[in-house]
Image 1 (cartoon, rainbow, N blue to C red):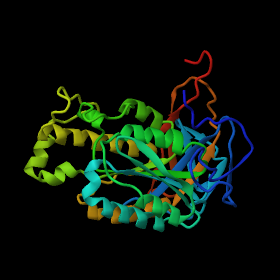
Image 2 (cartoon, rainbow, N blue to C red):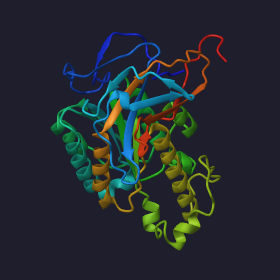
Image 3 (cartoon, rainbow, N blue to C red):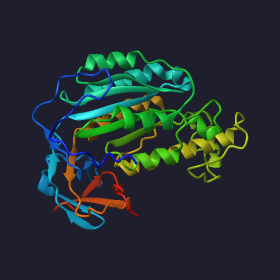
Length: 353
C-alpha cells in the first residue's frame, strides 16, 4: 500500500528536493524553509479564502489554524507560511484535439508560470496517449518556457495514467508546499470504450491514490464538445445531461460514440475532475472558450501565492488502514473558507483491521 502521508524517519529535509530521474535543478536547494518528517507525520497543503469575495487570505500564522482528525483537535507541529517556496507541476493535455489552439494554450501556460513567485519551482509534463516529464522541477523560468514550447499535439487521451504518473513519479520526493495544475480539453479514452486506447489505470485506482496524495490539484477542463454542440446552456446541452451519468459509464460499442454518448462522457469527465479537486482542496475550472484560460491561470496563481503547509502527528496511532477525516478551521475568523484534502487512509500494520 502506498503511503505518502506516512514517511520513513529522517532528519531535516530541505524544500524542493530534486525529483528522482527528472532533469531539474540538482544541487540547488532553496534556503530558509524546512520541514522535519517522521514516521507519523501528516502534511496538508491548505488554501484559505474569504467567504463571499473568494479572495485568498494571506498572513496567517500557525496559531490561527485549528486542525481536527475525526473530530479530535490535533497539535499543529510544523507550519510553512505562504511565503515559503512552492513546487508546482503543470500537466498539459496535448492530445490531437488540442492542435487547433495549441499556440493559445502554450502562451497562456507561459504567462502562468511567470506569475508565480520567483522562489517557486515548476515542472512541466505533457500527456496524450502517453505522459512525459518534459522539464523537471526548476527555478529557471526560461527552461520551463522552452519546455512548454517543445510540446506538440497528437494522439489520444490517457488522463488517468498521466495523473497517476504525476503523483507517484514526478511529485515523488517533493516536500513542502505543492500543487498540480492540469489542463485538459478531453476525456480519458477509457470512458469511450478504449478507442483509441485509453489509460491502463482506472478512475477508482486513481481516486484511491489521490486520497493519499498531498498536493492540491486544480483541474482546468475545456469542454470542446459543448462548444461545438450548442453549449451547456442550450437545449442541446440540456438534453445531453438528461442521462444523469455516473462516474463509471460503460460504452457497449467501443469505437462508435454518437453525439449524446460523447456529451454524456464529457459530463462524467467533468464530474470526475470536480471530485479530484474537492478531495485535494483545489478548485475545478471549466472555461467556455480557450481564450478564458489566461484569466483562470491568473486566478490559480493568486491562490497558490497564499497557500500554507501544516504538519502534525495524529493522536490516533492505530495502524488499522481506516479512513481518517480531516477538517481545518481558522481561529476567530468565521468568514474564512478552508480548502485542503478531506483525509487519508491510516497505515495498515500487521494484523490491522
